[in-house]
Amino acid sequence: MTFSDDVSRSLAEQAIELPSWAFGNSGTRFKVFTQPGGPRDPFEKISDAAQVHQYTGLSPSVALHIPWDKVDDYSALKAHAASEGVALGTINSNTFQDDDYKLGSLAHRDDRIRRKAIDHHLDCIDIMDETGSRDLKIWLADGTNYAGQDDMRGRQDRIAESLQDIYARIGEHQRLVLEYKIFEPAFYHMDVPDWGTSYAQCAALGERATVCLDTGHHAPSTNIEFIVMQLLRLGKLGSFDFNSRYYADDDLIVGSADPFQLFRILVEVIRGGGYGNDGDTAFMLDQCHNIEDKIPGQIRSVLNVQEMTARALLVDRVALDSAQAAGDVLAANGILMDAFYTDVRGDLAAWRETRGLPADPMAAYAASDYPHRIVAERVGGNQSGWGA
Image 1 (tube, rainbow, N blue to C red):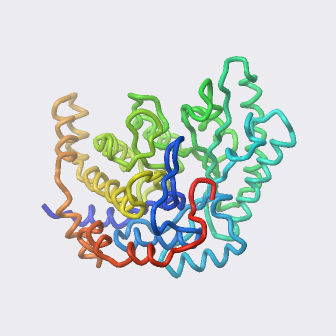
Image 2: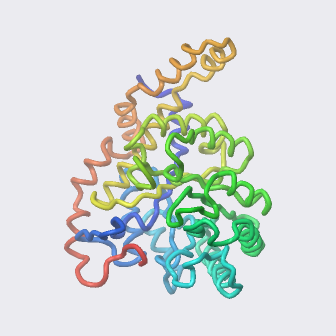
Image 3: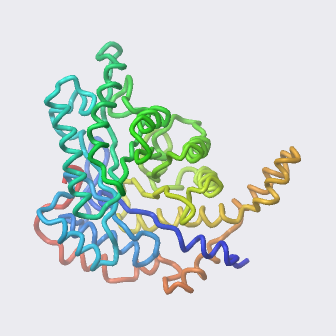
């Protein structure tokens, strides 16, 4: 099998943003593991991320996390990214690593603390203006651990008011993207626990406020592709944070736990007009490679997304629509499964070569001198990791 011209063109439209924090040291609640050659600052993180794009052609931008990626000169960071062949992307805020935020940030009862959290987001927007970034992504650790700990309705009201202040500063060509998470770090309730809450807050703000769907942030057995469909239908699916999980928010390599789920999600993205030039939904990874090497882990991740995208593009929509209209349950399911079971790896390898990319990006990176060079060169200093 060789890809049709339409599929080939669609594959060329794929862009998967990388998270800068995926290249620093990370671990579990109990231990952060170090790796030789780890980046020591945002400049080295971007150099590592650029390796992924060099070998896959899939990741032309890198998301920053503030204050982890705070620098004195963002124009210099932007120029460095350009010299490495990538751009600076989404700016991620952080209101979960300051003692003031123990009981919340944008939802906090204390006006001073809430103002501090709002001002942090306004600083992030200033950074967006300097880097040319479009999206401000907000994930809130706000919530409670015990029933009665705080008034849940009041917290929703305070978040809404805080978000209004932030949204008012968003530029004409910028977006506020609100992420949700069913639990952790709060265990009784999270203030933005699901897509409905995120959607309700975003709908109240305006058209430049959208929802971020992290594929690991759902209860077991949740039909994530239904949520994808609904948010696309409502025009509010701003971005994905792709990862994979077995039990909770494990942040594993996307597609590693359930590749069929990733396929189903991408089928709905394509069907709903959220893919490539047809849509405005940003793809991004959000994974922590705790025990595997960072750069190969990101290469493997974007290749997994590409492979399932290729399979999703092979779904015979005309035949599927016909089977669905006829109520032919088995035929409709069979058409979907035929696309999922198609082995596209050889065709993707050939497709990459036509674009001047290595047929096997994992092998090409492993054979390069970059892994050995960074171990030799990055001696001294403090490696980047959670919180830096």
